[in-house]
Length: 146
Image (cartoon, rainbow, N blue to C red; front, side, top):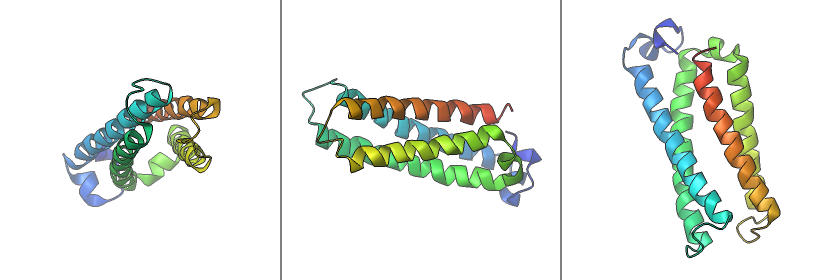
């Protein structure tokens, strides 16, 4: 998306660098979020069994949450630059719905004690998690072209 066409927050809309800088922060946040989730999810599937799952989960999920925080912060500011345009986008609305589903899946994983019960349900939840986040990333890129 080009920040020049937005009528939202003036400093984002009028600055030649603000929106691109927010996109960079958003991408760094996605990398932290997704990279750490993949590392954790691979461990759930049996990769690197010499790594104790709880300490790995503590590190990976802390970094994933930091990445999510960057994504939320930058995403809110990018949204504020042109909310009408984004709310009218079915791609954006679908992306936000999938982010919500990914969050609910993560909450379910932890509520059911997924770290203590690495079972078929936990593995299915990791597949669902990765699938949801990959589609979120795809839709996020698609917003700029729809």
